[in-house]
Amino acid sequence: MVWKTQGNRGKFLEMVFPSLIWKWMMFSCLQTQELNSPHHTNIPVSEMSYPGYPPAGGYPPASGPYQQPMGGYPPQPGAYPPQGGCYPPQPGAFPPGAGYPPQAGGYPPQAGGYPAPGGGFPPQAGGYPAAQPGTYPNMPPAGQPGGWGAQPGFGAPGGGMPQGYPGVPAPGQQPMPAYPGVPNPSMPGYGGGAPTGPAQPGAPAANRGYRGTIKDAPGADPLRDVEVLRKAMKGFGTDENAIIELLGNRSSKQRVPLLAAYKTTYGKDLFHDLKSELTGNFENLVLAMLKAPSQFDASELREAISGAGTDEACLIEILSSRDNADIREITRIYKAEYGKSLEDAIISDTSGHFRRLLVSLSQGNRDEREAVDISMAKQDAQKLYAAGANKVGTDESQFNAILCARSKPHLRQVFHEYQQMCGKEIEKSICSEMSGNLESGMVAVVKCIKNTPAYFAERLHKAMQGAGTKDRTLIRIMVSRSEVDMLDIRQEYLRLYGKSLYTTISGDTSGDYKKLLLKLCGGSD
Image (tube, rainbow, N blue to C red; front, side, top):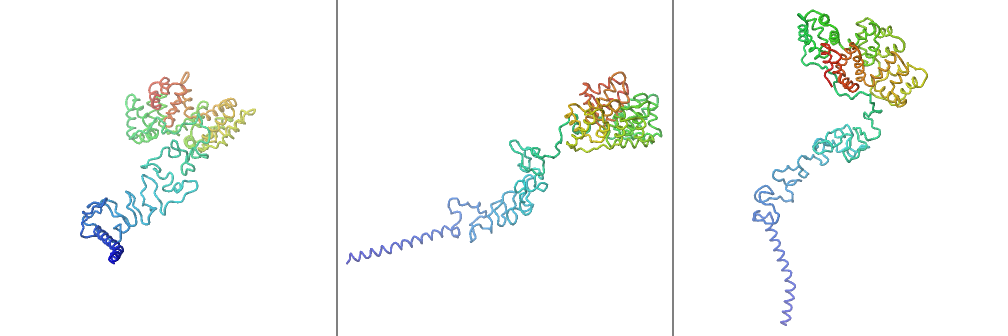
């Protein structure tokens, strides 16, 4: 009985004891959790020793117990609790990095929100634009802000240009397909100013700025200049050096007003006084320098026509080398000063196809477009071939129509096509088909169109070679080209004849005449 009672007690303990142990363990855990809770007001934060727990004064920034509001983490509505000195949180957004102010409504930012790095891509209102056909995805079309070529720093850190931009790929890269806005020379159909025909060896060099030797003198005053001239001519003898230094350092537009200033100041004619003081070629050179360019050309044409005989070379030189505006001004001045039109003067003094050539040139109606049509150039070359080398006799009218009406760039291409077709230069064909003044005139037109400075270099060489000097030709070219292309003429002279123009003039002229010519030449090469 006892054994049974003890056995029953043991069974009772076996049934009750586990339940008591479980309740005791649960109670202990709840007490421990409450004591360890950061909300327990009796335990300071400094006594907490969990690994990785932020120390006092760091996170959160306030000192004392960390009062976390109920409702969970983070403490501020929709934002991360800020660190000391950090970016102020925005509603509904993670604290951004430097320079990224988020806009309401999230990503993508609106216009003006996302600052583009170094001239990069500023987003447009309403998000990124849709991809355009033939372009890179999500890129604006050319011409709009942010498009290709619109921002100077696209694709390069810090706003720098990628190597080879624009139009030229960087080393190791392939050309960009359908690159909008900037022509790509590696692509078929490239038409952004590419030459339409082969390069011409006789074509003028690219524009390199001012190519004259006489420039405007800064601060020049006509009243002071005429005082210098008056003192140089007043009294016994003439101070030629003062005249040379003054005129040789003034441009044409500074020299021409001296005539009116002299008459206003002294009541006398400057031309008359200079003629009474100077003589010979020096006098002719000084008087030529005091005329406006078109006035000087008109006077030279008048002298070539009305003088003893006709200076056909002078007529050809002026009419074949001046542009339309110059020729029209020359004809206006000629009619005003001499009471007869230049065309009538030419007709009355010349004849035949040479007269037709000069009349055509004197109209000043040459095509001055820069564009060249290769197919038209080939057709004109065939017409010239058919009018000369490919027939018995010569159709001079066809040569006249093409050489006097077509633009200079077009004619350079025509000459190239002609040489490719016939195997010889067009000048040689003209010389074999024509003669006399017509031959000289046609060849001069061709040479002027091919290389104007080389044409004048040849004219200067012929004026100074052999016995005697053609001073009128020398003066006319030196005066008329000193503010146009004298630097190029000097280079061509050196290339063609192996010595400088300056040296040739020094050896062929003398005295004050030489000094003033060398001023116009501008120096030795």
